[in-house]
Length: 182
Image (tube, rainbow, N blue to C red; front, side, top):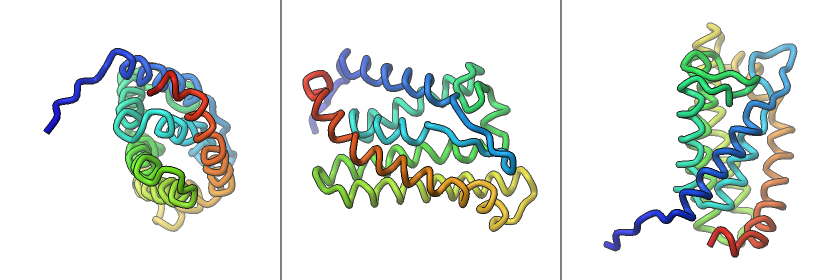
């Protein structure tokens, strides 16, 4: 087995995409009926795995998660710390790890197959929804069904738009940045 070392360029790209997540992650729009805000985090994850692949894209998100965990206000609403991760929306933050892995694997292994990109993104999002809803329901003493209506159902149209944007723009970004990222 070949022992591949990570290059300075790869570290830089991971850091750059982590920075983009740190910039866009806190930007959120609260909804009056839910503690779960609308964020750009999943959209940034889609673009990150398009550009970096699933391994480096997941590393980038994990670094973002650690930055927020130590208290830097990079999570939605410009919050950070263990309290945010342990709070009602923490399950979504953890679920996004699986979003990066799953969607990234489909993007990386099914090159040029848009329907597989969409399938991978939807599958990753379903796992994120599962983690997020279970934790939200537990934290707020809701049934799983109530958690779905508070933390998933209202967000589906926006998430469909984010997936469509990523599927359309992700390959274009990758192609235009190929000289930099490869």
